[in-house]
Length: 278
Image (cartoon, rainbow, N blue to C red; front, top):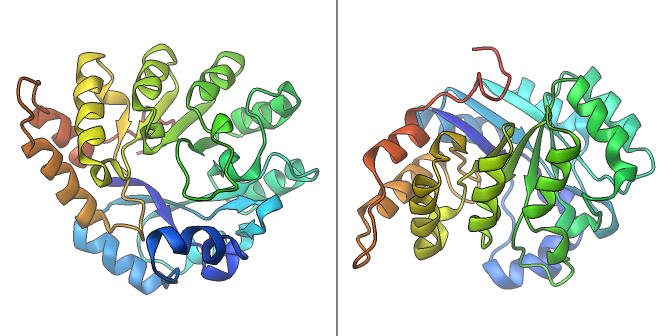
């Protein structure tokens, strides 16, 4: 199993953001996870490869350094691909990108809803060109946030369509299927050959998650869907259980989630499509 959405950042990387804006919603402190705990969770679900990243939204004081991700991956026994967490608002973002590439990081996590940059701004094109040339994967947090500071208009998955039209060879992943805008994500996946969506957290809002997977079937984009657990919010094992739970739902008069859809998410191998060697 390949898990494309796992986090390694620590509570200190959140600045004041978790305590001020997220803890009142989730009701608990952010719990740090060690590489050993990470390995235990991945092994329990049979994860063969995991994408690992932190977060960065400089204006909000959220920052996971490249060197931390590099070190975390080096300390795990899980087969991991480390991603940089970058903020396109940073004046030195190109230097941060070059540093991450030099450290062997293979992708970039972007968080515009908190960072407050607009993906449509063509001033960011040198970044996207450099990421394409380096063969990186760009994973976007798209959709909702519990933070009152978030700018939802900068987190609509339709913005990724704009980037994909300007940079069609760039491999991109829309995290969480852009919830609650899963329909928008699905049509973006359908028309852009190198844009994918991960299903992390789909089970947290069961009706939305069910409808998203059924719509993905109707629009023929199931092969563009990727498994993601959103660890440590959920372990991969909990994520698998959540997907099976969605598949058991039978809302009256609606099509079912097909067994092949869940089988693809759990057992499929998207590495070739993502430009990764097997």
